[in-house]
Length: 604
Ligand code: ARG
Image (cartoon, rainbow, N blue to C red):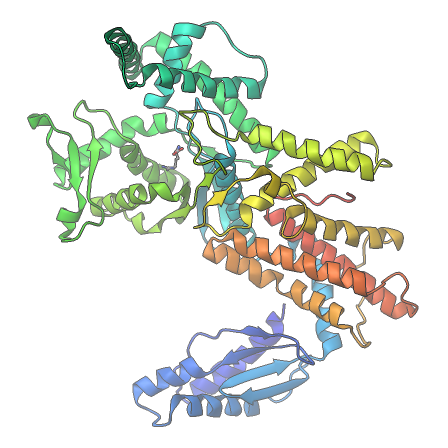
């Protein structure tokens, strides 16, 4: 926001250091919170420390840093827009007049609108892979955390200025998939529920039923054992046929896979997620085997198939590590079939070579940490140049109050059911409270709020923390919740509506030349922090940083709303400035919510 001033001063600092042969460290600026006035600061400690290392100055670092700050200050003279410059304890502090700062912040928001906070364009292309559940299951609340986390990360990275590609990678093969196809073929052939979600959820039920049929039970009778083994033989036969490309089995696979994908696409639609590239595990199966041949040739992988074993990579041993770290990974089964790990080697190659990405982020829960460490390490050993640009964004899993979710047992909270319940609850309240809103609009608002609550509950937790998903908690609308933030937006909107203001021309200068109240100062300060929050959240891959910010901003706005009566401000100039501040707050809340994949309803 103060790029112009910053650059001007940076130039002067560089000139000073060049003239005095001082090894300048990277210049970092930080805002000075309000205490009578606002400002920003930079420190000379690092530079003084660098200089000390060259042995040029014999002075203690703090003393020398302060000396530099003072000399630079003397060098700068006066700068337009800056009211005061201080050199204190090795820092150079630059202050603005309060009115100038306030109008600068508000003016910037109003001029940039939806782009307020957007980072400068970076020359880097980032691929974010998320929303990649296995097919032939149904989308549960754990998948929702993954999808939301990935989408918000993609939005943050994109808004921070990186070119962003959203990718999905559904697991569409393997024993779980075959299990569902087996029972369908055996017991339900020709049947098919009608709705998209019913069909997807039905597959999940079939999986539970099949698992029960195939699972060894305690105290089995010999007949039961024989029966179970016969089932398993059928399933294995189906797997073999799938592998061999049998037309009937492949047709069944395609058809049932599509049921899952239709459901997935529908849910991504609800979540406003638009995936750019779809990879499928089945598509990298063949290419992955070629890589294994190379690994064997390069003596990275050991082929133990001649002795009835598998193809393995003794990662630790090859790296000369004496402690267990990456361990030994199987990369091809003895029968020549690939594994999950094998396919990730090929996938990484496709991502970098076909999409020319510079960085590749995998949003996958922490239980797969070792898997990704192994995959990236093997890629590196293989000589894959971008192995170090692969990053596993690990996060905690979601459990229910009654325990872990299990697709095998069918003990999962399905996203669609939770979503429907959320809307139902909000509608109930809305119907009582806001009977004046037309029914259709009420429905739309209810879905915005219900989803807002759900989405925020998934983001208000740091990546590495587990979530115990309690629907009542997720749908409570008080405290740190999505609706609390949405409500701040609604309030800002209602003030502007009362004042009959659609927008301010950016050219309209903001005049904050009056005694600002504490609440106005806090609000301006919060708003001014938005751009750096975008940058921080994107750099750290932490949606929580933005989620917390949005809450703090809403909180500050609610306090302002209660303390400052904008419409009853008698002085017209002051009222006008306040209205502009409200509009800037509304815009900033909207931008923050958008990055969090939460909609901003006009009323609620
Ligand atoms: N489909 C996998 C699962 O549900 C997640 C895929 C993660 N991405 C990857 N490149 N391995 O566990």
